Length: 368
View 1: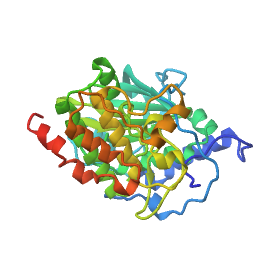
View 2 (view 1 turned 90 degrees about the vertical axis):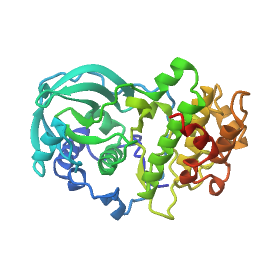
View 3 (view 1 turned 180 degrees about the vertical axis):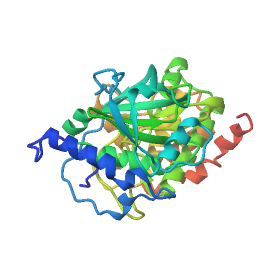
């Protein structure tokens, strides 16, 4: 098994306090977080991971939050500044001017608005950066929880990967900072919230809207795969809607560097979106994201995943049988694309570049 996950079971070599101090030191001094390398290549590609025989179970959609307190307290913090493109926004200027040094911040610099979302390892808020007036999203994660779940490597990899990505359909990480109790990621804010909530509010999308969303996700995943990065957790909850139906993929907690020709074996992701090779614990590559795009396309048009069942075990059985049943309203062109994305053999799945020129996409593109 690879070392993508670090379960917290068993005796710990270091106390939580020692590991907390170590994480803080790494956040302050790790150059790979402050100055990520260009074009999606991170220093993680130059490191050889040690094997780990433990596997983390996939998560369900009903994730609870691990941030147990509101983050309004006035504590001193420090900020790291990934390389960002020039931008007129105030917060970009603040972060850019701070580089390469770390700039002291306190949470009082942010005015908190509504809670945007909750995940297993974090809670996301809409905030206003008071010195600049810039509206952004702030993801708060308890250091204690990071230690207890033993996800220090996973968290640092998430920051490193997201900081290296620049694509219109991937949420941008502006910077990060931390205080004694928590780590905070300052990210791009999109006004219309999760795609999942929009989908559940209307049961399903039209072909025009769904094809536009699929086109954008195919382009974003293609960009990541060209840089040897797997997302591994594509689903409506991890897609945010902005202006003019622009969507952006977020939550890179399961993302990983995967050099060309390499295979992985860690079981991760969300049950309904797992590919057959993941369920069967076989080695896999970027084709797991292609399968997930097929599941997403079906869910956008139908309102539910294609293999959804009451239990995980029944869902697994349907996935392994490729028990794909289309409602009558799904068009032949859409069925063809979904079927090509959900090929059982990863080698037979449609390339992401071909998704963007598929007849179903081209037929609806004129109405976007």
